[in-house]
Image (cartoon, rainbow, N blue to C red; front, side, top):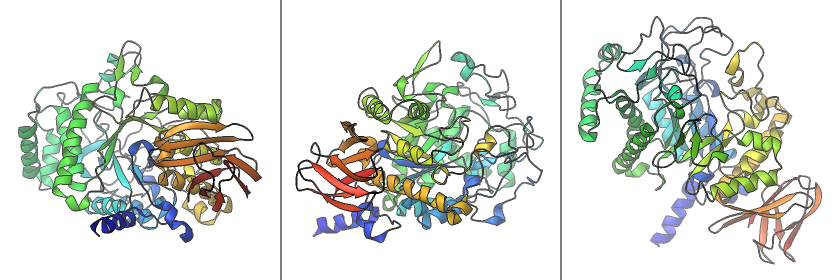
Length: 548
């Protein structure tokens, strides 16, 4: 009886809502592994405004360059969309949002017009959530609601730099940061011991020197009435770990507090190659410890025994590099003892330049061998990549097909699924990639809704079958389209793409036995295997076959 109760509890926990109630049984997530996850990446400020009362703080009222100021998106807006089932319908089981720590109060103007830290990468105080994004209570609710819906939460960690220096934001002490030279990016040393751009102070992550808290942070905490508590927690952290009171360890303490206090499930880590590799090994240890502590202190909030997830942004890392990123004069392995996964900057080029069959074979070969037990995060669009796969949004269907069906973890950039425009007149640089989410088109435009339906079907199928992203790929046929299988343990599927519309016959004998009842998730048809094949008639060129 206990076994039956446990089974029913797990089914209830992992059940996800869909737009079609009769397909509910097909959206039970049987397994979760990060290597096959569907991650949705959004700019916190640009996704959805759930609370207009927090839109202006710290007198951030200057007129900015186009899309270079705060637009109102916040944590409550994300929570609202989770509750509405938006992510579940898209097959998303993890959300990564840009940093939510308190940003510089002032603005900069580096030739792009006035800019505020709406994007979250200009930290002023790692210990506090920026009020433009919300409050601690908002984050607690977001994580709780996400977990209730089987969705994990990734925050974004920045250890490499502080925010720019402004009239409101003084430079951190010289034993904390360097303000020159500017990086040249042609060898290891001048990629890590330098500032990424002008006026972006670089944390001295290599230092083991004991440093005091920055005076501006001391004054801020005292004014907010929390100085004694923050110092007490720091004393406990350094006593427990034995780490020197060096800059990087302060920041690690502040970042891991979001694990122990809120129960987040992972970090995407910014500017990884601009910091010494041992920093990330230390950070992994700190994160893993904090995650264990959270689970020990909150047994009722544990999703499962999945490990804490660290995915790194090593700019221009490609899956073809395997484990070693080459600086020219030095190769560095960021995987072992540090990252579970790295963002893969190569997939968009592979999808443009290679047939799908070759892409799938290549990724399977590397992930099943050189990168076995690790992963890559594939993306087609991102917040700072000026050369996305489909900048003009002419290929939204192919974007989804290649992203969701290529082995590895998938990263949907907000608006990929709704063809949110990536060319915004009047913008400079990466601002064109960061427009507000196009909810109006989603609500009213028939073509946008058709595009989203394609993304939803592929996303739900993938989230229901970890084999799609994390299983073994096997080519079945390249006649009249591409047919292949993915297998992970007992999870087995057959997929066909670029097939003829109308009548089609799919070879499935390598996976399914004669007489087996199959379900085509894409067209919602029940099929029977006869003579090693299934025959169906659908108006689509995609078939997603699963055991019924």
